[in-house]
Amino acid sequence: MTKTAEKPYRVISYMARFDVPAANILPQDAIMFREAFEQLGKPENLAMVIHSPGGVIEATEKIGLLLREHVKELMIVVPDSAKSAATMLALMGNEIHMSDLSELGPIDPQIVAGLDPNTGTSVFRPAWSIINTPFNLQDMWKKGGLDPNIVALLAKSLDPTLLDVAQNALDLATAIAEGWLTKYMGISSSDAKRIAADLTDASKFHSHGRSIRYPEAKNLGLKVVKMSPELEQLSFELYLRSIRILRDRRVKLVDWDSGGLAADM
Image (tube, rainbow, N blue to C red; front, side, top):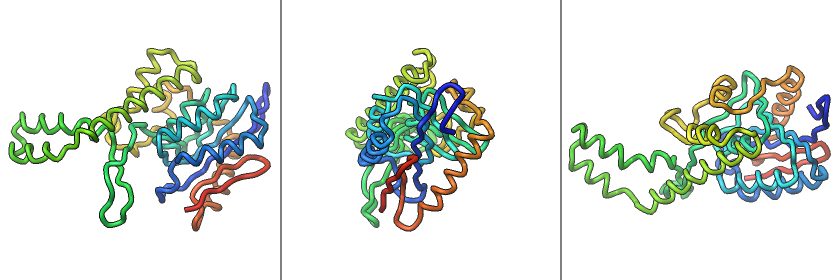
């Protein structure tokens, strides 16, 4: 896993739980990546193993820029799931290695739309859905499928500021994806634009958690590689060991060959 016939790779592992919000990709995660990268001696060739539900897009961009400032060849390995912003993180690789179990996901961003009155925690909503709500209401009104009074009441509840935030988030996700696909995967500008638009278009997947497996990723035009048996076995063993460690208050891990850091709730 750490060596090909032509060049050696150092390895960073980024593993997170899927059942707690604190496991999301957050701005402070960049500190763990920086420490790992410094300990590895800022290698030019890096393999990064990812299992993550995603998180904050700005934090994802920060981690990506931190790594790609020095890394020339980046191999992304997904033993199980890299969803949402974690899929975005995978797009900064030169190629993504996937097995039959591996899955990516749509990258339409989720934004904070308020607070849960019962728990006080942030409520996330898909930016794409927020943007398209006015158009959906308009279509319902034109088709006569909804009482005009109800449409008017729902329209009044729309927050123009939230619509603007959602549009900016969607534009940012699309721009980052398009740029990374072109710069790092070597995909043509026109194809990168199409792929980024597809990945951020929730209407194509109907669910933010929809699975994009190897065949679908290949059809989208991503540079994905089917894992070799050796890589699949090694990455899955690493994944299982990490999952066993991620219990109680531990929510995410950044590991490398000589050390590791954990984030707690």
